[in-house]
Image 1 (spheres, rainbow, N blue to C red):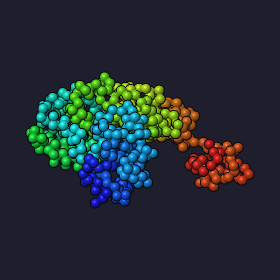
Image 2 (image 1 turned 120 degrees about the vertical axis):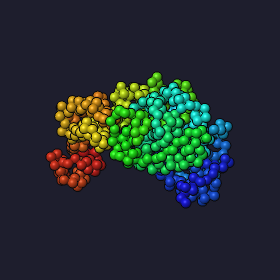
Image 3 (image 1 turned 45 degrees about the vertical axis):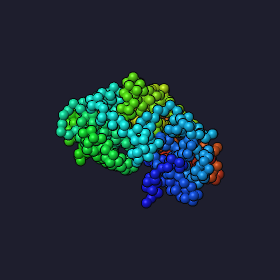
Image 4 (image 1 turned 90 degrees about the vertical axis):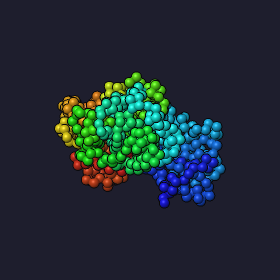
Length: 614
């Protein structure tokens, strides 16, 4: 038995100190397994008693490994960036003596008992830079419960919404409540959830399907993965409620195989829900039955598109279908099918429990509720944030994200992944909602939020996303298959210094044509990063094309290497390291670079300790 499985079998004692370790992908990637082994070893070595528990991602990924300690009668303390070398002192002082190790602690929080005694000198969780302004409704359980424990989920109100729905609400009443709440799909397009459910419910069939899209493929996106790893029962409960509302007989969770921990926890969640009567035949003795299966996808980005996803479940190649008919009429195996993504389903139990009227008050006029974003890129506090719709870009980047590291300047944020757009500093005070982002040239997408600083070349960034889209095109329709490849070729030429004046006009024209003519959302949105960078960072395209320079010195082909004679110490390090002997000089003469022979490998720049090469 491994330490990881051993600690999951322990039953917590209320009077025993608790050690909670973040065991989501972010924590595991930072070394949580080693920390766990060290905790088990040190408890035995120091002859201390504590219950060891695991939890999902609390959102502060930049501070992983996170270890929380709950000492009886005191607030919960979070230790950040925990290494195995820190474990002995944390256990000795906190578990052994009941005193928090303040130099390692980053926050404390009250849980359900407000009478416990706080520790002096430690900030509270909601006072932390990253947590100010957040409203954690969908992420309310992530980082607080063991995702493998159905009892912990139930203790925090889990499955109460399902019980309410099955015992006191008709399918139509459920749909009406979701419609009244204003919930829109969190997978990208923002289609009204209640309207989709109502459309599917009106079609009669011997079989109906409810599908959960967990094929999260955007670069920089990990919201769905974190939800599935940290609170899988909430997603499952929302999916069962949706199934009841549309009269579904079966359901599938389509999750990419690259999420092994999410898959593992989903399988366990389904088993536990069946044992407790929340899933399967005659759920909670209501007469409604639903079976849910897991389909592991191979990681094709296009399978995030609803009809391509359905083809993949059917065992076919993941390619979009021509519509109409829509999936709600003839979807999986030509049966009425309703598909929503992970975050959308996680909203459903919350809405049922709190009420549509309460939920409707959160957000903006046309975008209700909260949205989860994954903060990545050149940002201090990388991780997850959940904010009310209408929160500004500035609030997320600087108030919660902590701004740009190394005193660099904010340049842009790519919202919505390959389907979104790059928005500049002038739009920092723009509210984040569906309509505002589309008007600015981006889109909500699944919620990836990639921040870049002034060292980033926006032409190269557009090329990166176009390369992604061209590689992920299924090839079914020529506008996407050929168009993205041609746009990639143009962008590549520009970054190599071979761009022509007409290229910008051609890129804009092709963007419009691909958007209109492509079959599915991948092709229709693929030009967005190019269009947005041409719109807001056109001067960088001009510099690459006319001046043959990259303003950020990112595009290597446009580099020009020169030696500053007065700074050259004649150490000859550059000469010794040049692989093509393009540098001449001696112990008495400053080095000189032959630009015709230079292959721009950057070695001379890296090896010069005196900043003589620029």
